[in-house]
Amino acid sequence: MENDSYYIAMALEEGKKAGQKGEVPIGCVVVTETGEVISAAHNLTISRSDPTAHAEILAIRKATEASANYRLPGATLYVTIEPCIMCMGAIIHARFSRVVFGAHDDKWGAAGSLFNLANDKRLNHTVEVVSGVCAAESRELIQAFFKARRKEKKALKKARVINEGPG
Image 1: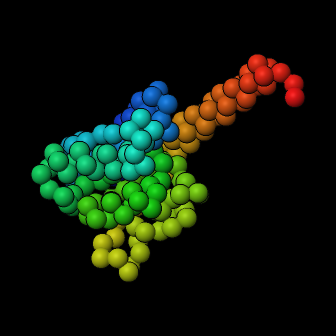
Image 2: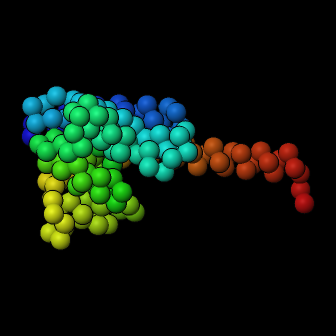
């Protein structure tokens, strides 16, 4: 689909919102087969103290509410980072036609990197996966976030040592 980078750019904007809140900067948008954006969300796991508050789950919840249907056949989910196992499970249950993501996630990815749930023939639904759309931008967003976080932790640790003194 020629508009994939357009929608991933929207997901990147959502991811930036998450990062500004101190959340892991992952963003997601859900688009109908006619090209209508029916939901957008970003990670809120930390602020909600909810391990299920991933961008994809929140966007799926909004999309199913907007469409008054727990299934979204024909829809495409756009997300900055490859969905995890939980999110791919929800994507499959919601019957998305496509998933388009930016950067691969070698530690948690369930759309081809670590697992490939999207095309597991043992399941009753498969999902077309398009990867690498705006991958550099997606990777850069998340790497910058974690780099800054490590720098903050290092500064805090250093401040504690200075305040507490030796021994």
